[in-house]
Length: 206
Image (cartoon, rainbow, N blue to C red; front, side, top):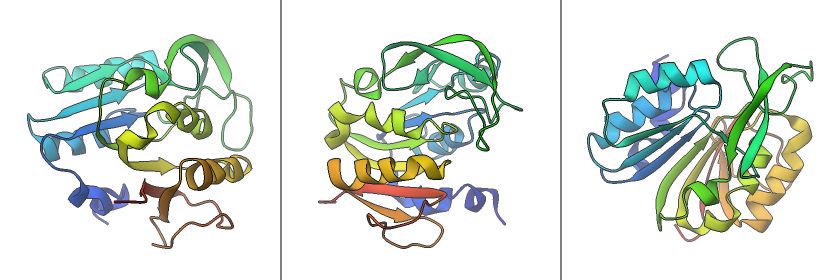
C-alpha cells in the first residue's frame, strides 16, 4: 500500500489547491503538514500544532525553513489557557485526556498551553481543511471550533473512542449540520452510524 493511501491522503488530495489555508491539529512529526506543503508549495498558509515539547522541536526543525508554515507548541482544546499534558508510549500517543485508548492511565507531565481553534483562527474568513488527530480529545477540539465552523470547508477527523462517538456525531451532524462520510467504507454518516476510524465532513452547501 502506498504511504499516502495508508494515511488516506489520496482521499483528500484533490480538495486542496494552491493558496489554501490548512490546519494540522495533532501534527506529531508532520506527515500531513508535509503533504500540505507538497500541495501548496510556497503559497497559502499552514498551521501545524503539536502539544508534546520534544516532538514539537523535531516538527519545528523539519519545517522551520518553510515561510508558509506556522508550527505551534500548543494543545487544541475547548479552553484558552492551560491543560494537563500526559505522556503516551511514543510520540504518537501523547494527549490531554489522561489515559490511552484502552483507558489505561497515562503519566502527567505538567501542563501545556492550550487554545480554542476559533480563537487561533478567528482572523481567517475561509479555511479549506482542518485535520484532527488528537488521541481521544476530538470532542474538545470540535467544540472549540464553534465560532468559526462556517468558515471551514472540510474537517478530516480521526475518531478514537466509542464512548465519545455519540456526542461527536451529534455535534457534527445536528449542531454543526455537516455532511460526513466514513473514509474507509465511503458511506454517509447518520445519527445511527457506528464510529468510523476516519471521517471527512463538509458544509452541506458544498
